[in-house]
Image (cartoon, rainbow, N blue to C red):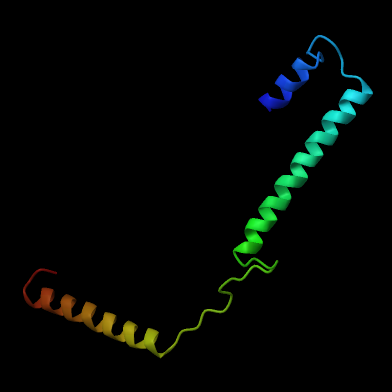
Length: 91
């Protein structure tokens, strides 16, 4: 990112010159440590919210008695509206 470029330029390793092995190793080391620290912070945040490595999903949906009752009532209401509109000449 921009911070890494600015730090590189400040140390005299601008775009005009090529980076030496020592400087490249240092940049890679800093990048690795920053990535590792970020990963640890993300893991700590996830663990504090109860994440334990298992993704839980609603894999088994069940169609219970409440669903049957809702479907019957809904279809009855829809049929009644359709029938009333038909009797009134609207459908």
